[in-house]
Length: 487
Image (cartoon, rainbow, N blue to C red; front, side, top):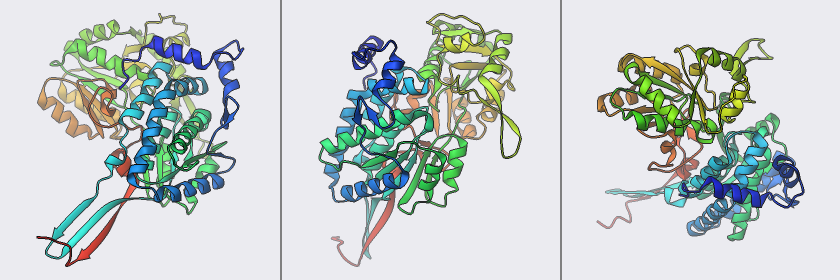
């Protein structure tokens, strides 16, 4: 891992990448250098005007990869990893410029994490069973062409992570990126194709469209060549994919709670929670969203958070901020209104969000924290921004009860800081999340500073969990009856 990549190094790389353009701002320069079909005047590979053409290209790619050995397939993946590491700062910068969300230094590290810890062909393992009646071989086969929906929060990271896993499984891939992150997502599609072609693969193995919409997504869902659908996004698109009638993998939303009890290393817990909550400005779906702290250690925990870049809001400031970062939205079909996050605030720096209520904070402030009651909207809604509410609780029973309710049954991710094995076990059993992180920042749950592989498609709704190459395969059985057993 390149976790020791300094901000100064990243800034220097980005400056070099965006230099020499005669523009007054990075944003203006970036807009001149790239869009959803080209970068620096170079046409992006694998980007098509319509979804039908994109699917056809991915189908041709699938036919090409079917004829390759697993060893050759792994060479393609190695090339993708190498190019991803090389161009991680470029994609990080482009992602921030296009979406307005996150941080360049953290997005750079996320791309390197994907390059280093996304499983390849080693994840595809065959099984054999012998007995009196012969030999049965079970192999993990590709589906064919996979249709993938990707988000705006981790756009190019998800494209590359999914591409590695899906190619390792032997599939071709067509993407329908989030409309708010088309250019950087298509840049990642181009990167995968460039890497594969340079390593001897087909010119187009993964494909996308110039202008992804709900209509292009619907076309993809219904196309007979698409054998598997994979969706990383909000509840609406996950529901659409699961209603398609096809095999689908759905990675939905979460609202990860954190419990800190009276046995925890409070200084470490305060640092870990702020580090996790502020990683890429809270865009990862696994990031800490609300804290339930034992009352007897809450003051000490808050002090530890302040030492690590947190700014404590007053109750009045928190309530005022809630009116800014959460807005009412009307459903045009039903006429009913619901509370949702203000997209202008998602993934923004803490100082930018604070300024929205006239609050000036220093550049060292990474997170806005506040004390809140359980019903406060900061607790109940997944904000995806560096705002962290802290709820005081009397004991472990109250902590678990409220944390499970705040998670809203998403069964995505939960965290706990404790040295009490009974407390840890009770919470893990009660919350039933796909990821449960103990005594570490949230990102340890996807292999960054923790063991295990990484993914940005965490399929709680459909049960695959942290997806990898094997998730994108189907089992095929070959039976040789009464033969080929040597015992």
